[in-house]
Every structure is written in structure tokens, then in C-alpha cells.
Length: 270
Image (tube, rainbow, N blue to C red; front, side, top):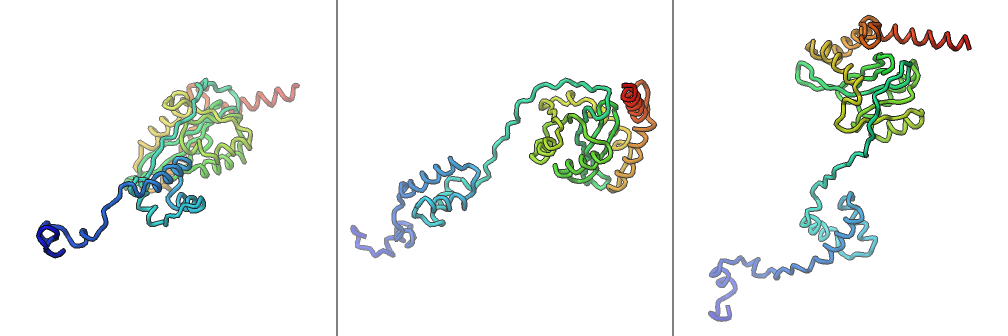
């Protein structure tokens, strides 16, 4: 324009520049430094806060920028992307696999999964009494959160009582605050096995294998009601008819009755 005396329109056409770009002011790469610094500071203090919590906090602190400018910088910093953090499990001590020959001394619990004939997945929540190898319950549903676990334990408590300890793995249902609080309220010790060491929960793992081979892998199920009905029939057979090698070929129910009879005789004699 200065050298050849061209108009703005002709000069822009000559160099292939749009008129809008001609009128746009030159960008200043440092003009958002204050916003970046403020966001970095707040994200460092509150890494799990979302945009609006951060923006409202910045407004409270007196920063002058509106939400549109802060959001633009927030996106440029890629803070709007999900921030995944790995949750480190606490160090677990090796738990001895002891099971005193007593009722309600130690229970073991675990989850299993399988599929219906139509491909729909479901889970089972298994509870056994280690001391007498008796299966207390198998809950079957498509989802079994920690609330369902606690509700199941309350139902067992009504007719069986509670154990002194429960042996479990490090699944989210057993790490939930709801389950931990329930155990504390009922004075039940939680014995977490070490991560990746299912052999430390061998009693319920052995039970799971039997349940899978005799029920889950033996039949094709069309719906959950069929699974529940077959499981209920199998549970009765397992507890009352199936001899157990570790119990001297007694059934779990007969073994429990023998222990309870000895305890009653001892209490009467003393």
C-alpha cells in the first residue's frame, strides 16, 4: 500500500490476505500469562475441581476476567480433558489362611460373573462360613454395588448372626466407605488379602470353582430367574447333601450341627 499506492482491497488480494485478517490486531502471546498463572495456581491447589468451581473461586479472589476469557485459556491449557489419576491401594499384610472349626469365626466373600444365553452379563456375590464351609448366600443380579453387599449382610445377620472377621479382596465394593463403616459399627474385622493373591482367599475361591463347574458352566440360562432358582436348589444340596472332603466327608450343615452340639454340651457342663 505504501510502496505501490494500492488500496487496502487490492493490496490484500495481491498478497492473498483476507480483509478480516488485515484488520485483526497482532496477537500477543503474553497477554494471557496472568490468566494461565492464576489457573495453574488454583488447579495445583484443587486438582479435582471443574471449570466453574475454579472460575468462581477466582472471582472470589478478585480476578477481573470474565468466564469466556478464562474458559478459552482453560481449554488451551487442555484442562477440560478428563484427568485420570491412579488410586494406589494401601499396603496389605499377608493374612494367614486359618479357619477355626467354629461357626461365624471367619466369613469369606467374593464376586463372580457369567453371561445369559442372550449375551447379557450378570454377577454373583458369594458368602461362605470358612469354619464349617457352609454357603450362606449367593446374590445374583446384573449389578451388585456396595449398598447391596451391606443389605445382604444385614439379611444374613438376621438369621445367622455375624462373624468376628470377613476375608475379602480389594474390589471397590469392599473398599467403599459404606462397607467399611458397616463393619466398624458391627465390630467385624476386615481382612483384606494382598492384591493379586487370590490364594489368600482360597476357601471362597474353591467354593467358586465348584459353583461354576456344577451350575454356571453346566447350564444355559435364558434369564436371571432361572439362575436364581437353580442356584437356590444347588445351595440346599451343597449345604445339606454334598459331603465335603475337608470335613471328614460330612456335609457343611451336619458339621455345623456337630460343632453347635459340642458347644452346647460344654456350656451345660460348665
